[in-house]
Length: 54
Image 1 (tube, rainbow, N blue to C red):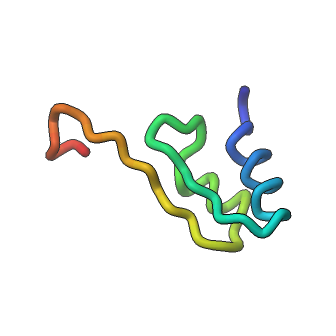
Image 2 (image 1 turned 135 degrees about the horizontal axis):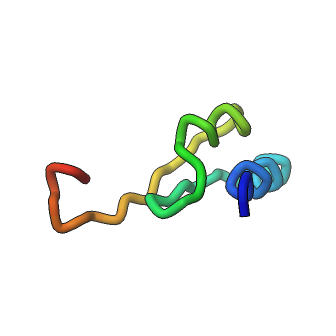
């Protein structure tokens, strides 16, 4: 669903909870931060076989 990460992020932020963003998320971390500027944003990184790319 387009914009789903931003919509979910806004709900999480409104509840005062931290927003974790995943490697497999539908939005870039930059777009998510623009949509939900407040609060910390931990990032869950799924390591790829090519560690340099990760």
